[in-house]
Every structure is written in C-alpha cells, then in structure tokens.
Image (cartoon, rainbow, N blue to C red):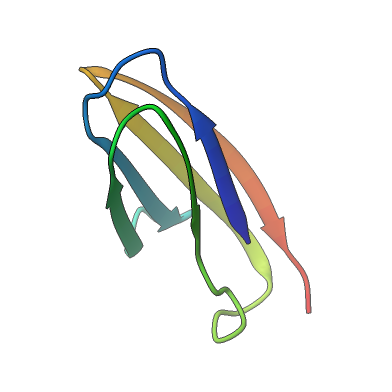
Length: 68
C-alpha cells in the first residue's frame, strides 16, 4: 500500500500503523512537504488496520481494510 502525502511545511511526517487492538505493526518517518511511503501488508492477516499520520503536532487517523 502506498501512502501519499502533501504537507504545507517541511517538518517530519510520522506514519504509524496499528491493528485494531492497538498493537503497532509499522512505523515510518519521512521529510515534510510532498512525498510517498509504502508498506507491505502481504505478511499480515486480512482485517482492519489504523494508519495515523502526524506532522507538526497535528495528526489524523484513517481506517483501512486489508483483504487477501
């Protein structure tokens, strides 16, 4: 899965991926501005995961569903 982002600042971006029980399964950091990061879910079970993106003290969370 690719995560594309566009920030209006150059502060670092943190992407945290957890399962629905709150267990962290992935964490990535990237430069601010425009970018793209990818995460391979192929070794994880089908289910619902949460992706939280944090930048400059603000964050948003998106729910994703993985099916194989």
